[in-house]
Amino acid sequence: MSTDLRARTGGVLVTLAAFVIVVAGMKAAASLLVPFLLAVFIAIIIAPPYQWLQEKGLSGGMALLVVMAALVMLMLLTGALIGSSLDDFSQALPGYQVRLRDITAGLISWMAGQGLVLSIDTVTQYLDPGRAMKLVSTLLSSMGNMLTNSFLILITVIFLLLEAAGLPDKWRVASRNAEATLEQFSTATRNINHYMGIKTLASLATGLVIAIWLWILGVDYPLLWGLLAFLFNFIPNIGSILAAVPAVLLALIQLGVTPALLSVAGYAVVNVVIGNFVEPRFMGRGLGLSTLVVFLSLVFWGWVLGPVGMLLSVPLTIAVKIVLDSREATRWMAVMLGPKVASAGVGNGDDLAAVLEDSVQAAQDTDNA
Image (cartoon, rainbow, N blue to C red; front, side):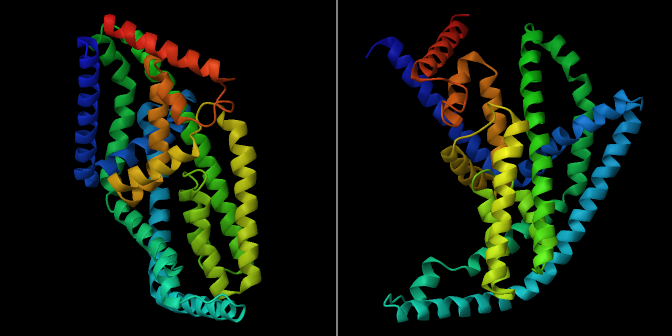
C-alpha cells in the first residue's frame, strides 16, 4: 500500500471517528442542544421582519422589541393551545383507543367472514392503530416540555439577533481570507433563510386549511390537528402522512367511515396543492432532498435529539446541504443529498461526473494550498 493511499485511508478513519464522537456528544447534550437549535431557527425566521422594521426607520432596539413581543404572544398562544388540547385529548385517549380496538375487531370479523382469518392479538401486536393516537400525546408533551424552556430560547434569540450585526466585522479582524468566507456564509444564510421563510408560510397555510376543514366536518380538536399539520409539514414526503393518521382515525371513531374518507381527501388535496405547486414555485431549485435522505435524516435526528429532532430533521439537513453546496470541494456531497439528478438541475451522468471532478480538484487545490 502506497504512502499516499495509506494517508488517505487514515484521514477517512479519523473523519469517521470524529463524526462518531460528535454525534455521541450531541446525543448526550440533547437537553441543552435542542433549545439552542430551536432558538437558531426562530432567529432565522424572524431576522427578515427584524431587518425590514429597521429599514422602515425603527431603531435596532425598537425593532427587536416589536419582533420579540410578537414572538412571545405567539409562544403564549401555542402553549395555551397545546396545554388545553393535550389535557382534553389525554383524558379522552383511553376511550378512543377502546373504540378503535372495537372497530379493528369488527373489521377482522368481517374479513374472517370473507375467508381471510386473522388473529386480533397478532394484528394489534404488529399494527396497533392506537399507538398512532398515543404518539400524538407523546409528541405534544415533548413540545410542551420545550415551551418550559421558553425563557432560555427567547434570551438566546435576542443575543443571536444582536450578535449577527457585529459578526462580519469581528470575522474580518480574525480571518485573513474574510471576504470570501463571508460571501459563502452570506449565501448559505440567505438560502437557509429563504427555505425557512417559504416553508413556514406553506406550513402555516397547511395547518390553517386543515383546521378549518376538520372543523367543518365536525372532528374534535381541529386546532390541535391543524397545529400538528403545521409542525409535520416541515417533514417533506412523509410528514403529511404522519400528521393525517391520528386525525383520520379520530374522524373514523367519532363520525364514521364517510367523514374519515373526507378527512383523507382534505389532507390529500391540501398537501398536493401546496407541496407540488405552491412550494416548488417559490422555493426554487437546489434545496430539495431525496426521499431516502429525508427518511434517514428523520431517523437520525430523531434518535439524536428526540421527538423535536424529528421536526427539525429536514431543516437541519437542508442547512448541511446548503453549507456543502457553498464550497466546490464539498459540492458533490450536496448533489448526492439532493433529489434526482435531472430535477436538481444536472442534465446527465456526464454533468454529474463533471461536478464530482471539479469538487475533487478543488479539494486537491485546497490541500496543496
